Length: 303
Image (cartoon, rainbow, N blue to C red; front, side, top):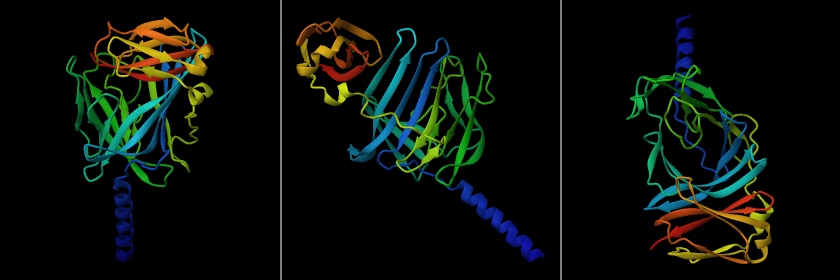
């Protein structure tokens, strides 16, 4: 009898050890993280995803490249906009169970630390001393047939406690409640942003059925012949629409804080734009078609 009890105990220990085995992030090309955003104050919503497109080497370190695609539904204006652009990179320190990333125009920073224990602090805000910490650790059996650790995150000193039982979570090999890139730590939620699913080309890892946002986005973007020059620019630039210019109705220039710093109608085959008042930096030029689709080009200003 004692022999059977010992065998049973060993089986339980083995199962527990299997559940605690670290599960790394997927690295296969075309693996994607699909997210959703919904406004608290309107019916506006957005679906966006990060897709692995291959590897790259930065400062001698190998990263996984990401491509960002999105489709947004703006209720007030009654149209849908599309976007497709470079999304950043990430890498994994498997030995230390940490994930690092870089988005456009940022240096490397840590996205996740899966080496935490219950009670460990994740983040403390400097303005109102909100303290985010790991309140529990569980395991989930996901679509890859493996157990992934789930870290439950709660908050102290929140001036407006949320209705949810817990403030957030993060999962080994997946990311956080808000997706691959953590947005911010703030218990006062002004909108709803969440990770819908994660999938490879062959199967869904997290979230069940996981339809991909079409990376090609639109016929306009696939077949465009738009050129911006000089780029980098100093005081002026030219946007050459070639054969597609009749589709474009407006040109907007945004800074990296999302502010529109210049907006003009598209009226010429070669549109000349004065940018002398803009500061040095990186900008996004949005070309909006008459069909209310949007296509983005990167612009650099150096004086």
